Amino acid sequence: MKIATNIEEFIAAPTSYTQLHISNKKITDAELVAVTKVIRPNSRSWPVQEKGHSLTYIFLDNNDLGDEGAAIIVGWSCENLFIHNNNLGDEGARCAYNRKHISLDNNQIGYAGAATIANSLKTCITTLSLNNNQIGDGGADVISQKGLINNRALIALYLSGNQIGDTGIAAISNALKSNSSLFTLWLDSNKIGDVG
Image (cartoon, rainbow, N blue to C red; front, side):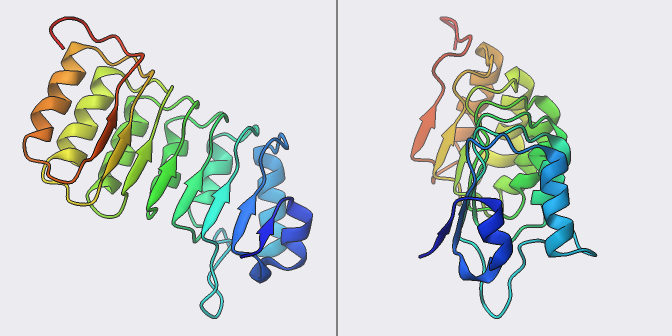
């Protein structure tokens, strides 16, 4: 297992690495776009699988990535993606597609982003962490309706600090009645009252 810890070493030999750890570098959308153009000038799919090679983990925590940077990441081949403490909004939530483990904690994802992610929950995501975003009751409801009912893949869901109230908790509770796979559910630091 070889880990790249900066963009320069990854650019030099992209197929040599199985993990990309570029955290705490304050990388912006523009920098990510520029790097992508250097590696694959005519493609938004980078890093791509070449001869059976792909990254297993990508960590882009504590940078300045927003929705434009996330749009680049959508095409990246990697099952495990961690983008904590950035500026991803609802459009940025699209980078959750085709992942197994996704963590988008401490971003600015709201209801529309939750709806986008909910569409991926039925197919492949086993761990989803959206702690400290702004999905609210509406986001909790859409994740429940589209992603939890009869879901057999998702085993861990983290929704702490999302302004979810009694209505959102009721939706999650009802959806869990037909869900046999969820093992871990975190809902602390929300707006859950006595009814929830």
